Image (cartoon, rainbow, N blue to C red):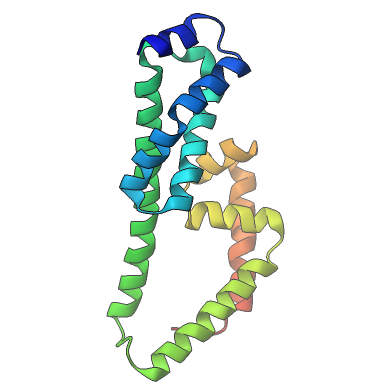
Length: 174
């Protein structure tokens, strides 16, 4: 802890941040790995946690910097867990209604997935971005608007256009 106080005693500049990063990256990566059991994901989330610390560097109390870093890392891991659960929940709901073991169902599901991937890939970038942020990241239109620097109406319009194009491209029903 004395080392951290020395680090943050002066201005929180790039050199200070590098020392903080070097001192704590491995332990944060491991902390996230224990929660996610995924090496690549733990590295990505650890980097994201440090990025958030850097972005908020002017507001960080030197005595609680490490605790703050761990809180960010924990929240990122929890967010990832929630995303995974939403995906698995969607998949399990989809498979509960039909016997997933039948060859016909497997073939239909594969065809639908291919059609969906092609349809999403064919969307213009601005529509695809909004669609995926809403459906995969579970962000509200307001949150998307804030992140992209647009109005909520613009996001609604892009989403409406994306859904319309997807309905046109996807003819297969499961």
